[in-house]
Image (cartoon, rainbow, N blue to C red):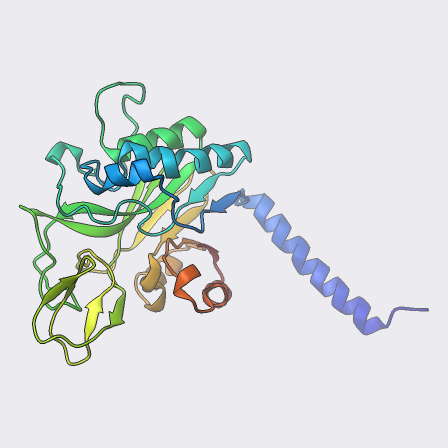
Length: 298
């Protein structure tokens, strides 16, 4: 029996656009392998005890060994080009132990992987950069990390986030290149919030400061809000331009529109959505990718 002409035409139409997409990928070298770590680290008890009192920043040595080394090794073995870890993947409560100035995360563009074979103590970001360099994989990581104090009030607490000296904590996503370069540092501007019981006085519960509010709104992020939307873009060694947003920033036009208008079609999205938090987040993220016509690494 003959195949109806309409079906033949439809199949030819689909095949044409499929081939166009394949040829476009091959032509501009945009094909790459990505891996996303979609769970928080399982931290051994011995490491958890050390992390609780550690001054190693978001990633003391024991946590690097427990949560980063093996996934990066496996990604390299599978010829993965870029691996993305979740939002706030390391230690959350770092307010009690600010770093020395020389140990602060540098600006993007710095060669972070210096003296990878040295035995002297090194800040956490040097060790992660050395892993990216050793295994030739771009590593993108969500962390709470230190930065300069901000004068503006938190949008939910209505006062500045606590500072220690001239430093405070931000929700960041950092990207390390295959040569150990710090490719990008993104700061979360649009903080997540939740509704809690209205309080008559300011209290601290489970690391979160609750202020009096008619709506009982509080900040889910135990960190300061970056003063402005942070348009963060970097170009990989394989020629793809990536933009970064974190979690709740998906719900806002900026910085996303600025990235897309500058030709970004690959978005890195470290997040704590999903899992125990419930909700159909996979569908939300899929819809986001379709609407904006981007690849979403989440």
